[in-house]
Length: 127
Image (cartoon, rainbow, N blue to C red; front, side, top):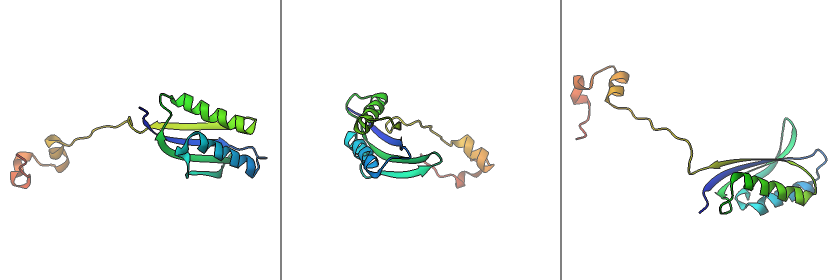
């Protein structure tokens, strides 16, 4: 079973790229992974024009992040017949880093500046 991923893609365009070439890249990216459908656009950054896409979904069964990146990049290069810089950020949504934080009676005393036993009437009884 495939895991749920958030994928972000950046494809750096050449200054001479036409609307046709840009359209080919977008169609290819969506064709390879329809998770990008509807959230892909052309914009500019400090280095020039880029295509940026974002989506959530499952990769093909058993496919690693590297294999996903290789598959998308190869499809773009084949469709254009030449190189473009391709960057993919893959985040597994099922194993995000997380931390648990709990406030116990010691924290209550520290933060409130009183001892739990000092004001029992102010502390709800959860027994």
